[in-house]
Length: 479
Length: 87
Image (tube, rainbow over all chains, first blue to last red; front, side, top):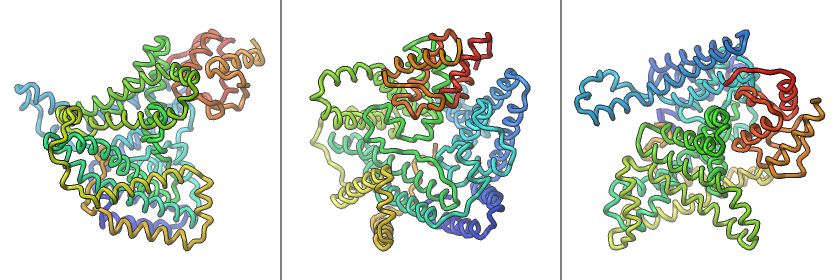
């Protein structure tokens, strides 16, 4: 079921009404029920898998806590994490790996049974398994107690607004909200609706309109001039940003309508002054997750190897971020490029500070230049993220570098599109900026309701008049 | 080594790692109280603490710490005993 569909709106509306009619004490079971209905509508067998994984995590955490000594706890957490990681790899990487193997060694092509090659990736599996792994490890690290309330834990794992694409919320922040539910206030409902509205605006007005241009250019890089290709690279950065942050807003807004506050995933990433900061502001719940459960343990394990250990931990972390998106060489390249960025940035950060301290006159240039530089590094790496093959990525880069201005510019993106998208992006970033300032938010909430509602209606009107209703899937659904 | 002594030495480690002479560690201090105390610098801090006090932490111990007070207690505990598991 797609978020942008009549089906979803009907489902969501019904679920929302039922939720607010249900007594407070019953809400937990209600959300559990509808979350599983939502999942089973896509696939019943995989709903059983979801339940099985949830049950195993629940039992594993209680076993870890109950173990009498450190050795027993450690053995149990390793076993549980291994099981979840293998499950993830089985569904996400087995089929593409076997396919690649069959492609490179023709003799092997018929060997793998067609049944294995047809295994679909369960929707949201990496998001719910990441939740499960963080919970089990947190219990082992004694950051959280093992949950006794199975229904509450099962809602945490399967909560339908978050299961498709996150945000990856931690159990310690989710469970108290579901175990002691509070009546959902009018302000919470309104802020949920605001997020939904803004999310749909980003998706339908900005991302899907940019997609027309980006898809057209990436589909045939050889037939466009260098400037058009360059524009397509920039356009994709904003397409992905509007698409994924829009999706997150819809997920967070939906969750709010059920009284659940979920973490944010983006925090003005294109204003980051260095690449480390960028990764702290882009897909935040994933990078925080990897930081806690991959990077930091790796850093600890490699801490006797000085800078080499640090570089290795950074590279492994970024390669994992890359291939988490899929078993493709382009994602691997994306990860390696960001690994190199981070290593260089971390290793030179002290030197840069000293340099700019010695040259205070350059401070203002740095203030503008640094985020601009980071943006270009990010845009370059995203060529590999968007391209379907390495050849396509090279074709984009090569055709930009030759500075050929003789060929056609894009015919399928007119002046009207440019104006709509340009104003849309400005509006989006202005709202993001306001969202990051609590004081301004209070002023907005304090203004006369008539102005606020006028703004909501204007936004709804903009979506209806300017949106691209082509039911294009969200980019992050497939990860 | 008593608790006060550990705290004094730890203060020096914090000042050196974060290059800030104004830092004064408190029991309830957390990463959010110190500028630059992020995940990258965290292990640098831990390595520095390990060297200064001649102790060795496990990943679990480092992750269980809730504030500087618990770090001081853990150092004290380690100084007064030997051994420990890994992971």
